[in-house]
Image 1 (tube, one colour):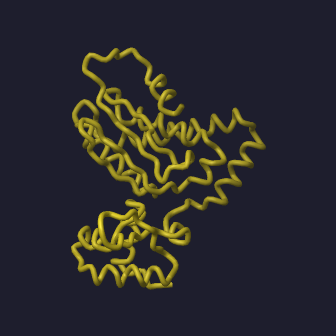
Image 2 (image 1 turned 120 degrees about the vertical axis):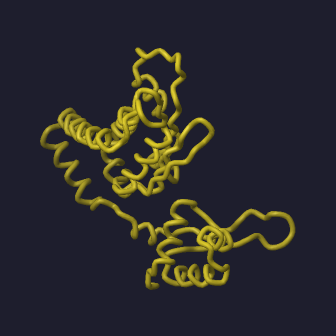
Amino acid sequence: MAELTDAKRRILDRLKRADTLTAPEVATAFELTDTAVRQHLEALEQAGLVERTAALPQGRGRPPVRWRLTALAHDLFPDRHADLTVELIAAIRESVGEEGLDRIIASRARRQRATYQKALPDPARSSVKVRVRRLADLRSAEGYLAEAVADGPDMLLLEHHCPICDAASTCQGLCRTELELFQEALGDDVTVTRTQHVLSGDLRCAYRISPRPADADATEPASAELVQASA
């Protein structure tokens, strides 16, 4: 396997975020020469970590070569000991039943909520942008390779890696509580909807965080929006 120098690791991280990139696009992002980037990509290709993918023709001439990660490269990202987690979930379900498992997941969500609310700025004294960016930092520290992106008045929380994907496939309550968790942690002045979901076949999980209108009915339960988002 090619030695994973800092430059090669940065290229792998970039491809994980962007799905496919050309060598010039990578070079521009990292302020490197096209030649240097191609050398890194070819070394990673020989190691089986990246591969070339066909690009749609754009006008005359040969379409540019686009690069993407291979399945082998995904093993370089955190997985939270997926096999053990899945086995533990199965054991818990067998011991305490589905309702017991739901209570355990709810307890975990309460602990996460307390941690996030302690780490995030006070909603009354901070902008939505600041809160979402801080949440992205927290999620990245947990292995989700998250980023916050402004989209008009909204913010997008993009998670390019799911370190608990196998566990979530076995116990989908984990995903349900995450959506509720983001809503509660970010505050009542926003609504959170999931727009992409790895378990639905998307390449990432994505959440749209929208400011609530100032005259919105404060008594409306957030769960109604969450149900609609997850439908």
